[in-house]
Length: 195
Image (tube, rainbow, N blue to C red; front, side, top):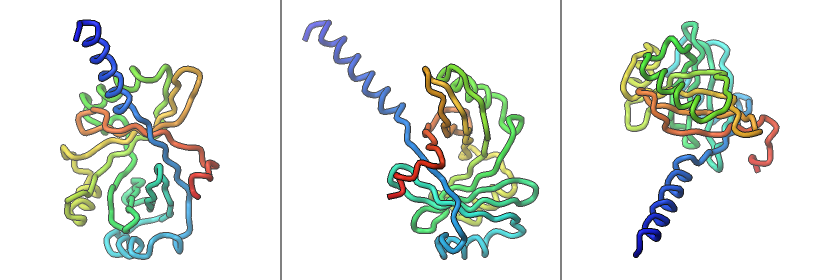
């Protein structure tokens, strides 16, 4: 193999890896009735969440994965609890402001957004507690007490411009401000993904 072939191989490998890391998944969310929400998930909410107000129910479609989300107010915060199709809690989240994020993490997050969008506007920030392999009661307690743990993530809903296109994205960053995932949010009338 000559030097030119090695360089070409490394370039193709680097480009392929960058493409895989930068894949954008699409997500759509729409409101549903409580009667359309999984019964087991409703029972979990009734048993585990006290003093919730303005409970609303949603169905999310992310590629071919269906999940359900309950949104409500509790202790002056806006919460969301996401359930998978088996009615197991996946994520507990609530809305926060930039001042609620440690400075170093926020700085790194903003640096990513500035480096990847020509223009952008943060529409919403949420602090997330993932429940995978964790006790649900403890995860709920951590979220309702707003504990700053190394396992939390931040979800930034961003309207960003790349080239001529301005689109809405959901970006997930770890507790240190490193990008974990970026998803393109589909418009509410994008119904053909439902079928």
